[in-house]
Length: 294
Image (cartoon, rainbow, N blue to C red; front, side, top):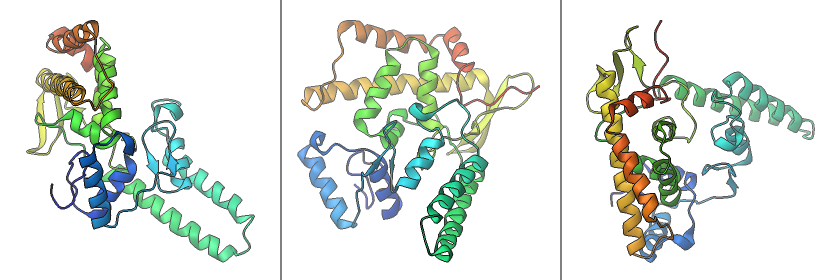
């Protein structure tokens, strides 16, 4: 492993702070870890003085907040399915209004108003910086070399990622593939949902789309070619996850099992992704794509 690699999923990070945020954002059940993983985790925690805090877990998803305020803001933003009222994230104005309202209520029970005003100023400044960064500078990259299962493991942890992919693979409908792509690409480094689709149509004919590639910057390709790439990414994801499940079962590290019927459905789903009609249906459902131009 590198200097700041995660001891559980081996994802590399550029700094100790980023690694600490990752370990605190991904739920970990120590009892399910191997002895080697426990040793590596303990070694990394001691080496970089990382503080693991799981006090404020979201009961709707795998997000772990550092404090109660962040947990409340996460749930009100509608990022996780349990607290999501619709597909439109809560507006920044609403979040800011809730933050100010909450702070005013707290002020009523504090004597030192000057101190509370100073705290409010700092919190609003942090909030505005966060919203500005997310809205203006966060870039979603999509490449044919992407590993969707690795992205999901980084966001959710190994066990939850496998179960998420398993559910999608056993659902013979393009909407399940759309949800998988949505989770892999439409969540930022903070675990919050990205509001602007990363793929846009280039003209009113809906023939070509443009998106950002980590390798070559802005790319323009036909919608058909782009959907072929997404289908290949999904097929690889389902194949890699199936192999991972088999490996864990053989090592006695997983209670997941697939019967003959489920394996047949899994294989049929992968074959569907090779069908052009199925890919056209998927193109109409994916949230990665912006609205058609008029």
